[in-house]
Each structure stands twice: as C-alpha cells, then as structure tokens.
Image 1 (spheres, one colour):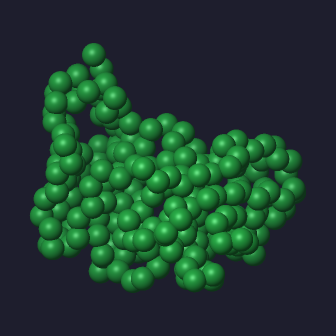
Image 2 (cartoon, rainbow over the protein chains, first blue to last red):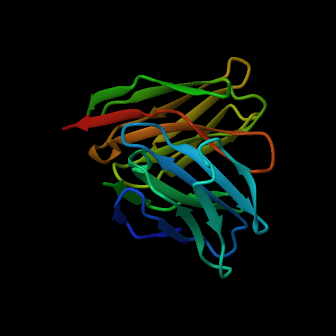
Length: 110
Length: 113
C-alpha cells in the first residue's frame, strides 16, 4: 500500500537554528498538508498546499514557517529560528482526496 | 469556533469486551467525519469516513455512527484485542476545498488481558 514517507524520524536542534522537515507524498496525490502535535495535545493543522501554492494556513503558520515542493516529489516544511515551543511531532499528509499521514518527525528544540 | 470534543478522555477495558467512544462537534458546515487510530509516536491511521448523509459505517470490528442533527458521532469497538490499545481520534473536515482536518483530543484506550 502506498505510503507517505517522512525524514528524519527524529531531529534535535539548538534553539535559533533552522530545520527542514522532509516528506515524500503518495505519487498521484494532489493535496499536501503539514500538521503538528505537541506532546499530550491534539493534532493541529498548519498548512495545506495545492497546485504549488498554499491554499490555507492556520494562525500557527506564521513567518517562521514556510513550505516548498522543490522537485515535484518532495514536500518540505522549513522552520526558521526555532523556539523551544516548536518541539512537537510534525506530520505530513497527502490526499487525492483520500487522506494518508506519514509516521511523523519528532522535533526537539534544546 | 469549530471544535471537536471527545469522551471519555481515557478508558480501560478487558480483552474481549466491547466499548463505545463519543464525539461531539460544532464544525458547520462539514464535509465528512472520520475516526482515526493513533499508536504512540505514529501517524494517525484512518478507520472510517462518513459524509453528513451517512448514519453508520463499519470497518471490521469498528462501527461508527453519525447524527448530523445533534452533531454527535460514536465509535463502537467489538471484541477488543490487546492491539486495540491506542488513541482514537474523531476528526471533522469542514466544507470547502482545502482539505483541512480538525482533530479532537482523542480517547486513550487501554485493553488489558
């Protein structure tokens, strides 16, 4: 069964550093998403991406965040100048329209 | 504000027993309501998807119901197994074409032998 692949599975970064989280969506899917889940809290929508542009973003998704589909297969989330409160699981998903989530990247900001 | 609330927050049952999880939502209008299973440290996995016109949907030992008038849904798990231990999350997709999902906080189910 097709999968959404996320790398790395764990990332530890120093506060203030930039991180890039990577995702390979299912190949024939057209819609791409990033969600995050802070430990012990609910999964929260960050951003949706369609036709090479952001279609919706939450209030969490401020100027610190950006997304890109650089080469037609990868879908990335960049977090600039990371803060302690950015520590969370970040999930990528794709849909067409059936939704599939990746296994997540656990980001720890120290 | 669009919200999804679940109860109970956690539940412990014995292997082989049945259980029912509840979900109330205020998302309106909505496109569909989903139930996901999430193991610790893993991504959510879809169990059922129902549109606003559907009342019930089954997937093996999982049966979801939906009452769009009262904005309530339930997930019934039959003959529980140890592997059912996980978080069960009610998720609503608002109408519109962005595909955004709104998650509940989940019910943590523990199945004991």
